[in-house]
Length: 92
Length: 92
Image 1 (cartoon, each protein chain N blue to C red):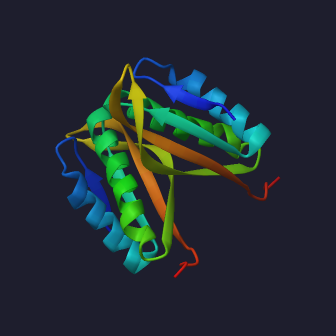
Image 2 (image 1 turned 45 degrees about the vertical axis):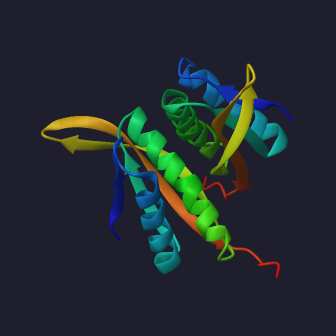
């Protein structure tokens, strides 16, 4: 499964759409962000994806963890969000 | 239950300790942040709280949502994180 990488310049709606798409298909997604601006975009995208998916009867929750990644031979600390879904009853 | 309010200047370890304490007592906590710096601190604190609580056999996940709050007669959009715990088997 591909990691969804978010930057400070990522569009919230585009990232939210990507998260919702991966969740619908795989029930699980991984989102990675480095730096305050990127983390903020990722969180806003997850809040928006939550409301998209709620209409389909899917609730998501996520767990953040620190991961060290190497970019241009320097180690940086990123936040990886593991997003998971659970089905909820849809009230008609 | 009190809302844990996080600012861009909040110390990660202090917020993580507060989250872990509330989760241990109530199994649920609410964390509020306004702005990119505050959201980033909140996420880092939740990642740190996750690792504190994992040692006690508690896993946490959270759901972000947008909330409008009024500060000095202006409406601002905050992120509210609902943090919830589930017990996991501890492997001895």
